[in-house]
Length: 280
Ligand code: PDD
Image (cartoon, rainbow, N blue to C red):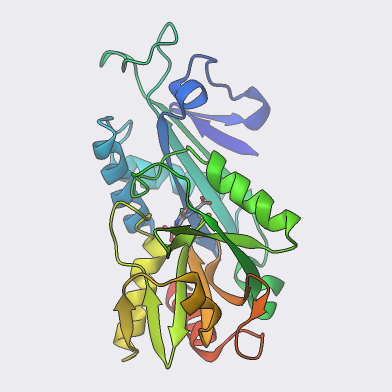
């Protein structure tokens, strides 16, 4: 596989980053995941804009401008012959001479890394046909979840807790309400209304979320942007999550309780269909 690191395209075995890199030492970095379907980048603009915002909130400068970023994404898709898959992008505050909590001076260049992951048939996964199960866990992350940082230990622990409980993923709960999934935004459907938490610093502003809510409104579906409790979720007609890698993924079980028939519901299936139709 050919990867991109700080201006160079290299075989993955030859790519490297300093041990002093602040991404490695402090999780001082941000990332984006963009999907590729049929060789085409999905929602690149949204991801580029959110990256810009994350960098701004972290007081980091952009290592490359938007046009260049798009060119790198396209080049990696071509070089690695990606039909369906993902592109991972990470920007960190670079590698100063020593470990120091204080940000380095402007002369320390940010580190930028991109790599691809080929996932044939990404849009046609068995999980999407069967639906996934989730458990609920406390949300113990930091308070700026609107910034897409590489600080992913807690979400990783959440996925492990889900795995140990025989489930596929975890929904995180704060002050009695669901915030989001470990790596996706969370939704329930009740009496035809799509309910998902409003945007704030408590959740990531999903690019797929924005597209799906726009499509739902265009299709005259009712959307309520508000928090919901785990109890409300377990009593919902259906549920689903959205992300760049899962698109719209039906959730059929919450904390061991099957929703409706225990199979993907009509609203989740329809949204997945119209999202993929527009993407392809
Ligand atoms: N995760 N919420 C969290 C906490 C996320 O990590 C993600 C994305 C989302 C969905 O955002 P988007 O629709 O822009 O992908 C919501 C990526 C896919 C990941 O970490 O792999």
